[in-house]
Each structure stands twice: as C-alpha cells, then as structure tokens.
Image (tube, rainbow, N blue to C red):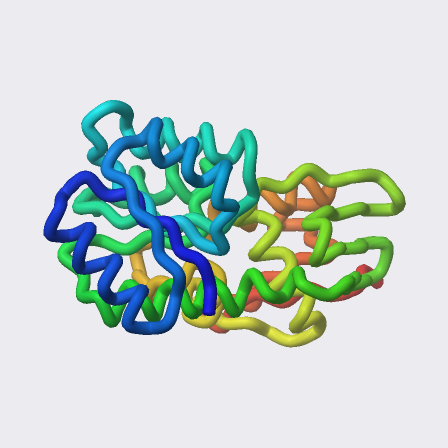
Length: 226
C-alpha cells in the first residue's frame, strides 16, 4: 500500500483516479488546484503524485517545478497534451512518468505500481561502480574520478539503468520502456539527446566513447574504459 496524491481539476477524472487508486489499496488524497495541492503534498509527503497540467490557478508545469524545489517525490504527469516537445520538457523538468488522457483507471494504477517499483531501488544503500564512475542509487549522485557529475532526473535514471547492466548491450526499446515507461517510438530522439548530454558530462563523445558505447542497430552499453 502506498500514499498517492492526485492533482486534477476535472471532477469526473479526479474521481476515476481516486477510485482506481483506492480500489488497489492505496491511501489517496486529491486536490483540484495547484496551491492547495502544493500545501497538501508538503504536509502529506505522499509516495507518488499524479499531476494534471491544466489547473485553474497555475499551470501544472509550474507546479512541478515548485514541487521539485521542496520534494523528490515521484511525479506522474497525466494530461491531454501529447506533443513530443512538451513531454521531453516536462521529463527534463523532473517528471518521472507521462500518461496521456484519456486513460483508464487500470492504466494509471499500473503506472503508479511501476513507478513505485523503480523508486524502491533507492530504499537500500547501493553503489554501482564502473571504472572511475560511481553511482549512488539511494542518494542519486554520480561521481567520476571523485568529482561530482550533475545529472537531471532522467539522465541519472538512464545512467543508473545502464550501470545495472554494465557490459551488456541494452536495446533502445528496453531503455524507452524501463526508463521512460513508454512504448518505443522509432522517430523519437529523447534517448539520443539524453545520451549526448551524459557523454558531454562524462568527458566523451559518440565518436570517441569511453563509458557509453552505441552498438549500431542494437542498442547502448556502459563499460569500463580500456
């Protein structure tokens, strides 16, 4: 059982989400405005937040940034906005999942369960070491040769997933499913963009890789530099 905070101004959709969460055994709280939700999230410290973007007093994207300033709670964006640029922007702003309306209660609850499984990785002290690269899962920190490497949420999730499969080629389909929790889209450049950012932070390039190696037509692997 987990505590879920639903932020949704549409009464019918809010009731659907609350009912789906409650039927799955979760403790649920809901608000229809951004400012009431922010106060409630700070007070209740939920395990997961389900966040609509079209709120009456503040855009959900702005509320996401406010939440991120005070909490690392996993956030699922639930909205009718399905533009790729908007999805990428919100994931980079700190969202963990993105579900497009209309959605069913079963789909939303499955997303919550998947997100909870991922967040539980941080429940135990765990450090992944690949060469001079150290990734602390619980603290969500990365160090390279003893120096901190600043990663946004998705960069960290991507790097940590590759590190847990170090030496193994991970397909793009698997990365998109396990890190982004979305069906793989062949034209999508999200993975390429995040890999490019990570390579720059790790002091390498696609042409001269050290840790992150692309296997053309197969996927990506993280290995210890030779």
